[in-house]
Length: 386
Image (tube, rainbow, N blue to C red; front, side, top):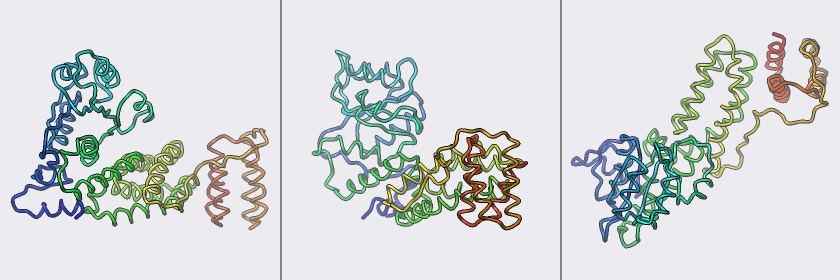
């Protein structure tokens, strides 16, 4: 029986107040109290924000561990000088003494009773430092917001003495499996269990939707660029709205917010703002797609198709007037249905040193020609004359 099947089983009990993934109170002591067989496991939570600290403490408490929480690095050092803890979670950002300095002081303190404790750092969803930075500082692992119950449970399962584990191997295997999936997808900014809620726990349906989201990337990104460069605001907005909802449904919340920003950008008369923010959207979009593709073991997913073509140029910069003259010549060829001649002139134009905005447009015109979308190429060329 899978972990989600267990949730559904409990949901149907009249005596249980189940809300499961909806984050309401649940009565799952028998299901989740993993450490009641022999001994006790002591956990210290160091988080300055009161609400966040209560949330994290609740997640640990549900496992049956003995949990203590404090709000600062100084309080942490006071606790470890009086009590021994097996596992410690420390926030990265704290006043006066941050998480890194707290760990250093904890390890160097002559009065600490928790020098052998495993220590994990709690990070925001987006941080500049790479994971290896925190590993080199001595942390045993990283936990990113928003906190995922199965990831917390799995950390405890990995560290607790085996004699404390229950006999329910299936439950432990389920937790490990979900935690592994959640950790893999969190690395690409996807909240797995939050997305899984939208599919009522149906993992197969979730994977089908994620696979389709990967498959449509190349076509949808090309269509968005077509709409952007031809200044079709309504069409651009409709497409971005659909992608926003798809991303949010899968738990790619940050990507959904990026799409939402572009919905707002497309409400103006021009899509210039959307164009200037295009690369940041693509960077996040491709991060999510790459993560899903790796998780799903999809080898057919193509990314990078929306980036500027990297090619050698002749190093010569053209004036705005010269560029417009060449664009006018290309349009004249297309009006005479001389597509081959237009393509050759576009190739010559692309040999010159062009600023990023015009390079992107020339790149997109090339792709329009490759896909035999002549009307789109014409619209982009006309936009370059405006």
